[in-house]
Length: 329
Image (cartoon, rainbow, N blue to C red; front, side, top):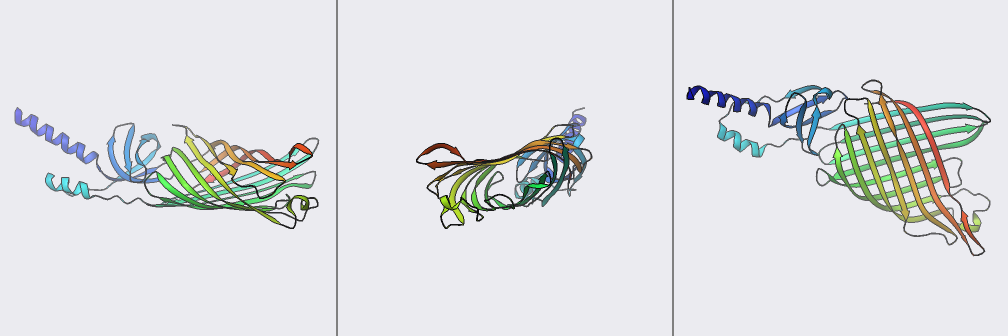
């Protein structure tokens, strides 16, 4: 009886060792591919240890399939030694998304708008490359109200699985506003609290230099003189938040930045702050196709400082509510 009990225990330990603690590739239903080490699993949850973000919990309802690497039979002593030497190399992760917005409004005024937004992200062991692009065009009573585009390439270098350094460029072109072009070069440190298929929480502290170009508009020479551009240094806080509601098709998101100038390049104009915010909800009709509702805010707070007057404001505020259809790959 004791020999039978001992044999049963040995078989059970062998099964447990074969089920966890080895390399596996997990294919998610949303298209993501995760490579890591399965540390524990049951009928509802798979615990996967990822090289770049630590351990994550994957609901089996969101898993399409699991590919496990077959292990050659070895003696226990050899297994113990090789476990220390195993290095799992993270597979490249690529994500694309495209969203299209179009609308008409007929009331006291006739408004038409068209918007396009795209995003790209690629990550390997230590580097993450990103690119965001946005285009907005709006008319009111057949007159242009908004016509601008924004390009944001960036690169993140990871010192540790959660700590990284970001370098990025923001280029904006506005065909209507007097400040028709803006270029921003910034760099800083970021921390990724979570970065999984279901949840992302990241904050980045940046410092940089921004240059704004102005058109030859009557009245601006009073403040700018002969200059056609202004440079100022700034500090900035960025955030990227995303949460896919468990066992549902809803994903909430919020991304944006808060910018504070360090110096004032003009005597009579005081730049206070700049806020760019996009928050909303994605609803996935299929694994790829989604409907999105977002509230976008672009707010530049600027005060005019004159000896004879007080409280003069030259704020620029743009608030839009958008309903769009798009796809994520």
